Amino acid sequence: MRKHADDRIFGVETEFGCLVSDDAIGSPEAAVEAIKEYLFHDLRLGAIDLHARDDVFEPAQSGGFLLNGARLYIDAVGSHLEYATAECRNLEDIVANDRAGQRQIVRAIHELGLEEEVSVYNNSVDHFGGHTFGCHENYLVRADDDFLNTSVQMLYPFLVTRQIFAGVGRVGGHVLTAGGLRPSYQEVMDNPVDYIWVSHVYSVVPDDRVKFQLSQRSDHIIKTIASRVRFNRALINPKWEHFYSHEGMTRLHLLFGESNQNEFAYALKIGTTMVVLRLLEEHRVPYSMSLAQPLTALRDVSRDPTYRWEVTLADGKKIGSIELQRRYLEWAQAYRGESKQIDWILDNWEEVLDGLENDPLAMGDRIDWVAKRAIVEQYREAEGLDWGDDALHSVDLEYHNIDPEKSLFYAIQDMGQTKRVIDDVAIIAAMTDPPQNTRAKGRAKLVEQVLARKTPRFYLFDWNGVALDRHTYVEMPDPFETYESVPGV
Image (cartoon, rainbow, N blue to C red; front, side, top):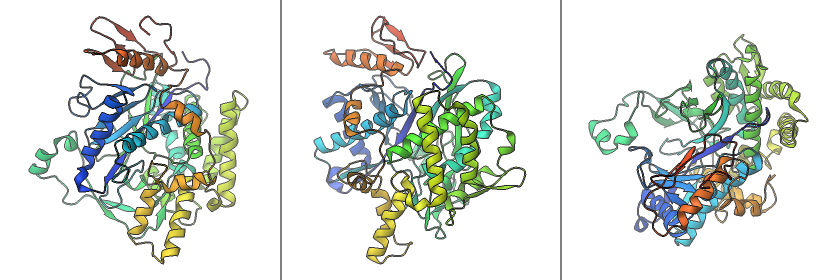
């Protein structure tokens, strides 16, 4: 049960890209299948689904819940690895749980002897193919009509400008085009999952006008809110289901975001968003903050080489992104002193905005886009390349390699050039230990029970309940409860 106003459940889903450098190994799809099989069947880090969670998108054996409370699976749309963190209530837990998932994947690659041929990335864009990959945030919010239909619009200005400290950066840009895009009959027959529920299809071409921008996904967002998001990507995707719904609360699913390598940026992104959602629930954000054109502002902020990051409000007035963020911060100061976590969020939010105002390019220890830009610039100058050279896209990509032995990000972290919020000991512990103050703890114990059986023939795991056999079902409707004392756990 939620104990106080700043108590909130949150989690993040990350879609990973995979590259295979040796054709003898097989396709990327075969590589991610091998990784999944090794984690569930050899290392036994989780209970693989015996049932189809979704006949199309998540068939039986596609993944399952892990000992650390998270969920790892292969999404049938694109056949990519996806990792959904456990339900968390504090920032250290979600950063540790997220990084633990990456370490599990890396462990599988190394123990399978594939580290020379297979690389997995938490980037959010395919520079050459034009695809974009999700890093979706989930927050428990008040499930009333006013919030979901009206107040949530006051989230758009925050999300659009949040990229000044939460963006991961990218070389170049994309332009979406609509001409001649209907898939052929054969394409639909060959890849039916890719075209289910598609209401709009677009193609992507490189935009040579852009050297570097803040966000990898801003060029691909075409709606503020949408329920059908395949080729119809939005800032927000409403979720009307029961997994996170409890006592008048429901899950808000944010699509516009990307996977931060920097732990500090990751934590600040989640923390500030959590605080802003509370502001909206309490009607502390005036409607005068509305943006005239949120999606235009999204791309303008991402692509602004002057770092003024101006946006236009609905009343026609212009305001810089830093000043807009400061207004949200000012309203949030009403919560100061409620908890150490709240004070950490407010203090670091203010410090980052001050730093961005004074010298944005000096913030590389805590902001991904700044660190990546510095790495790309150094490589470009050393090799005498211009911004249009394809080699820069490779440098961009390697920043997101999740293997610490390969990643350009981890190279600067190893040199002490990043601001951290946890240590490696916490990450290692989170590979098998769930958060201790959510239902993930009880569910993880049940995963452990199932794995202890010699031949488990029937079980079913979901976020809000577990069937241990055909006669025993453990309900877990409250994400704030650990369910340690429930029979069966």
